[in-house]
Image (cartoon, rainbow over all chains, first blue to last red; front, side, top):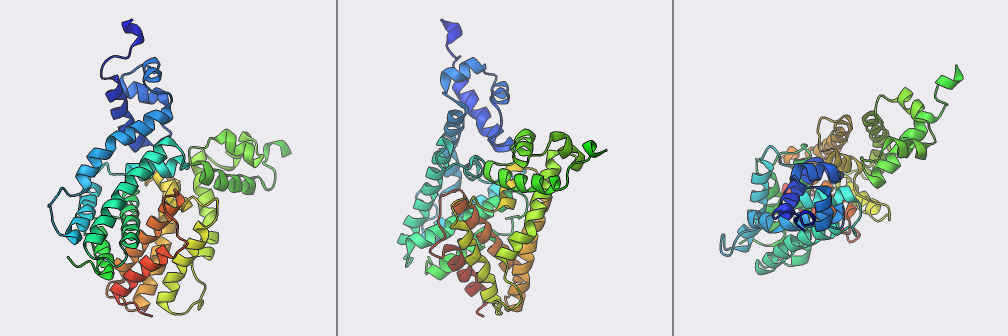
Length: 192
Length: 192
């Protein structure tokens, strides 16, 4: 029965609308507004997802590869660990320069949901852990005395700079985030 | 007419309940839940405040002096600029050790409201600026080459450490926030 099966593309439209609406308006955005923005019936939504929480988690999960591709350097571009780490903070400053920037969508979801066990918080924490893994590996390659400590410090700077720029109390255009990261790389002995 | 005047204490009870509920559940908490928790009628609430937004802003404003007293050192305790700055990060670690810690209430409101012009966001931004002012003054006293830059970096570390601990992806008990701040103080030449 065609009437009981969501039309092709409904899932993608729902997740696109969810990513945009939840980011812009917050995770409190209701099912009605979401379905209206996606042009998908509530019936279809509930055939595709068990709950709004699942839509939210799936929408964040779907953004992860694109965000990672924008923020993390590809192999060899640049090559040196220090430059590869600073690349991330330079890309953050680029992103923060956009008028619709409101900080990291993963961190925002975590702050708003206030529940580390929420499926979307779990997706967000995993995304954060992937960036920390990148920092840790490059810190180790760069000869940091304590790669794990440096990775945690860099995540603090990343999330701090991102959230402050996102809420409009800071601007990153003068290199604040990369300069702060560079001072921590210096302290850890990652000079190249 | 006594029936048209909110009972004494209603304002305090509303603001106490608002501070607790908005922090624990988010700024999306509704008027009904708020009035129920405060034991105040909606009618009384609207006699005291023009809107929920005003309650939220007033509740944050009311928390500011207490938070500042807990986080910033009093005169002379300690005396040296470097120690006074590190004091703030040590107090943050103490706060983050509490089971109900969910990060900075001001930053959380800013993230959730997604509107720098919201009256509560304005109160929150002012609170952040007061802490930055403290860092800037101490950085200047401590001989930092660029006190304003150092203050911005310290705010990045403060908010980054606070938000990461608040959402449960980081722990500050090993001195992460103070150690990160110390590395930036070293880089800026604030040694005492």
